Length: 407
View (cartoon, helix red, strand yellow):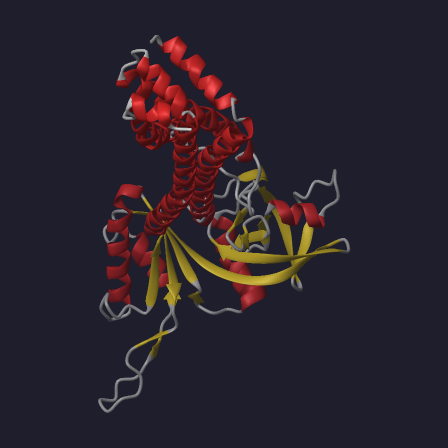
């Protein structure tokens, strides 16, 4: 029998029970679309996490002051000591002979204040640092200029403000450059506006004001000689681990301790990214497995409908075999019918999956993974062959005399 004849007979078989066939197609459709949409959600989540980590800075290490080190009061008399990150630590890490894989070091002072201008107010995170901080934390200036080393040395009260700070303090058409705003109770001159970065986790990267750390010490945090953290930029992502080892060794020497007892936490952004990628990859795999289970259920529906079809068409099978139809012809006839149902469901499922992936799901923008479309369609085809073979083989194995006797 020609392929076209098998296709025609399959279409007739499917159309003979439209509702039942439609429900079977629906089962495959749901499975295929679930694979595409859920994997797209996992991929979108992965990209969102990677983007947020990238916003933390490029090739950076964050050294965080954890407070104290030592074992505390004990029988030996060893006491805890106050751990501080100082400008001496900055100078030691910046020395190329000590840390050849470090590009820059930025001391960081952070505080939250209310920014005020002409009656408008906005809650702002103030970062006191040096010019290298903007590069390390991936900020760029969209208007005006960045703070300079000279302004840091002179304790100048100047500031670069984030996009949200500009939007909330200044009315449309007002040029913020050269204007004086209040940060807390102190006046700072706006010399630059930072390009928008968006949010990073719970932090709004655009609700920030970056000023010389010397001015922040003078006006906002007090003249403490210690910093809350250091932002260290490595020369490249491939040597960031080497830079981390160098920074830890320098800080251990500066504080007369060992790396194991270092009173600071060094956060490697590359390690965060690797961990995030691993976690989201696992999540995507689990979502794919869940979707695959629904596709398996659809395959069972295909087998069920084909077994019912074989039972209903037993006399037809008997007549065909009685007039000389070989076993292979009967097998192909019913196998084509099962595969056709799966392909129709697969094509419809791909369409639904593509449409469904265009909508935001629980705050996540799904991202279609290119491999999921041929994979889902291929699995649908495999489902038709696998779950259709048993009913088709059962039909082909019927003896003509037994089939003709069946009512």
